[in-house]
Image (cartoon, each protein chain N blue to C red):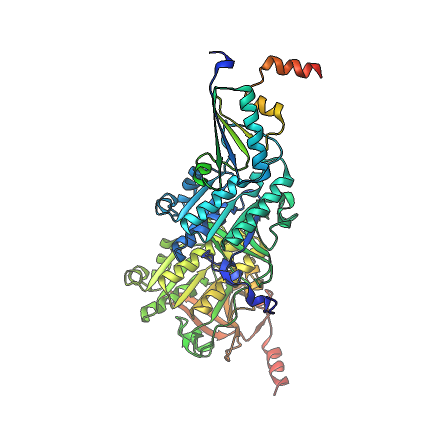
Length: 504
Length: 105
């Protein structure tokens, strides 16, 4: 048996069926092995363990065994019903079997040396063989140490259980408690005897916000993606990991142009936006960002499907504004061409928003998506989480060949940039700035396209006006400098002439 | 009914025919014969042969004694070589005499 095999190929993986996890783990959990899932209290360890089994039943028709040391089967059945997992029904179908090792209340027990876990082992083997189970979950190790004081015996016996699970060719998940988010892998040094595969679930408090992340610390002898990945626990469906750095820059490129919804804008962009591009519109409040979103969505009048995510305005406000510019949103919605999805940023965590946005895109299958405004979401998350969110959402739409227009509100009225711009500017294909221009005691508005990937574009700063027909672009500002930096200054005609002569 | 007349129903769970199992069986039999002559029923169950019984009784560790009668139900885990503690666990040492013994020490 001394054939040399490529260690990467040697270990097969079992797709868990947990959304996102199989991508991060590059295929799932190592087949026929035991993985330790460690996390602090409330880090969704039990949900992970249950979902591993539930997904096995639902997606791969694999029977399973759940060994519980902490909660009673009754409690688990009840708690998991909220995720749509009807464990009681699966038990009746012999697809889910509990091995109940939860502490018996009121039973007096005297423990003396010397003993083993022969009873538990026999029950586990019996349950696996009776149902042909392929997946096993064990929740949690810490609770066994609490029931039996002699840690040396408990460790020896756990090791035996793990090796039996392996002999029976089951893939198992063992949960273990951690005392700190960043510290030892687990209590009682359990990783020392089940150390091949370790997954850590974290629930970190970051700038007053809870943020759940999942990290694969090690998979012995096989590959996986490294680092922490955010995940969320959704009522009705369970855990969903968000594979951020796992996103590949593989989207193709197209030369197809689509209309921005505004003819003037199309002409200065060299004929419109690209079909698969992400466009950032940045401007202070009142510069017309929502108008650009509405005009962008107005293309659904010409046969495209558009989905708008609004985080600043309600459905009624959006509809009324659009009506003012001659766009009949309710009619578009009736025809199934448009969908408005309005939420307060504070109504959910950023990860929840991300998953909701992805689900709505999948369900509606739009040709174009608008987010108004992306920067409103800055306030519900930390900077790091926000950057990951932006990258994830843009990658997602690009993979689907969807044009996306996002808006960012600049914090100052004149000039300025926002966190959104800092994080998104390098991954957007086009950037349009809307700026106030103070000129001779008058507030005017200027628009410029500062980036248009893969195309020539007009480099002027054009004045624009907004009226009942929408946005109209005018002439470039010729006698003013410093608009973009937020310090507009008029320059004399003579100076302008002199500058022009310099290049003649 | 006095203490000395109560009927004892005792189960002993073991795993296979290991030295530890044999030791536990031997120890418990000796105690029952000496202390409970004629008023006990002892059932020895091998979890390897009867995993469903182990499941029903929620056995984790073996050897394990379950004293089902007289109430309260008690469990004793280990190879039962510490005779005094087994007797205590089975309520076979009368409270007074156990205190008397500890006072002696």
